[in-house]
Length: 429
Image 1 (cartoon, rainbow, N blue to C red):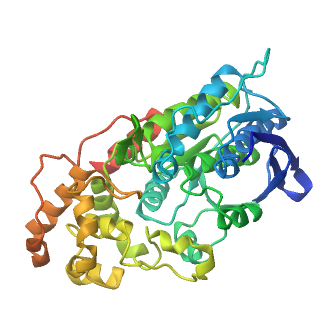
Image 2: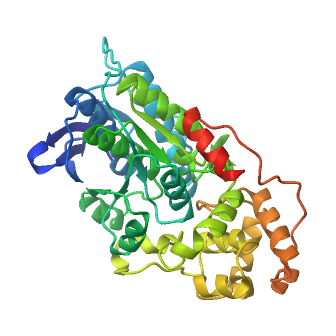
C-alpha cells in the first residue's frame, strides 16, 4: 500500500525532558512518538546525546515500519554510514524474525536501508562518567544482578521504561535511586492494526538498549548493565534459511553488535553488557532461590501478563497459564520447597493438565519451543531431572523427559569488563 517509510525528524526538548520522533508512510500517514526521561539530568555531553537519540529514532521506527513493510526507506533527518546501515538492517531483519514467521513473510530482502554519500561518523569521548544503570524487568534476573552489585558496593541506579505501580515494593527493597522513562507510542498505530495493518513481535530489548544508553549519557553513567543469560542465544526455529529467535535482541550476538555500534557511533566511554551472560537460566534460578527469594517472594514475577496495559494490574501475579510461568516453575522446582513454590505461584503447575502441551514444547518434544523468553531445551530437561531427584514432585512421573548431560554450572562466553566478571565469579563460588 505504501512505497516509502520516511524517517522525518527527531527533536529533543530539554526543558520538557522529552524526545519527539516523527515518521511517515509516503507522507500520507504520519506518526509521532513521545519519550519522556522522567529524572534529573547531569551535565551531559550534547553531541554524544544527539548521536544516542539518532539511534533511538531509527530503532523506534521499527514499530511503525512493520505495519506495511514498505520497500524503500528514506531519511529526511540524518542518514546512515555503511556500518550503521549494516547494523540496522541486521537488527530489523533478525529482530523481526518472529514477526515475519507468524505473518508468513519471507524476511530475505525486506529491509532496505540506504547510506548517505560522504557521511562519516565516530564516537564522542565523554570525560568523568561514573557508575552504572541497571534496567529492572520485574523477574529474578535483574533482581539477582542488582543484589550482587549491592553486596559489592557498586555505584548504580535502577532504571525502567514505563510506570507500573507493582514495581514499587521491589524497587524499594533494592534500595537504589530509581529512574523512569515513559514511552508513548502513537495510538494511530493501534487503529491501523485494527484495520488490518501487519502486527507482531518487535525487538523491544533493542529499543530499550538505545534508551538505556541515552539515559546513561543524561545521567553521566559509564555502564548500562543488563541481566540477559546465556540461553537467550538459542534460536526458536529456522524459517526460509533464517534463524528465528524470540530473544534475538537479548542474545550475545546482538550485545556484541550493539556494543560495537555504541563505541563507534555514540561514545567509546559508554559500555553496554549483560552481567549474567556467563550463566544458564538454571544456575541463575538456583542463585536467586537460595539468596534472594525469601526477600522478594511477593514482589517479583516473570509472567508477562503483568505488563498488559489494559488489564489494570496493581500487584504482581503469575497467570499459571503461559509458557513463562511454566518455565519458571520448572526452574524453581529443584530449589524451593513444594508448598512454598505452590504458594508463590498460586497453584501447582505440574498438576495442571492444560499445561502439558506447553511442558512438551519446553522439553523439545514438538516442532519448536514457545515464542517466549524461555531457556534452552537441554536446561529444561536438566531442571526436570533435578526436580524429580528431590522427591517432592510425584506429578513429574507423568512426564516423559529424556536425560541430559547439560552442565548448568558451565561458564559461558561474555562481553563484560573483567572487574564485573570477577564479582560474579566470586559470588558463584
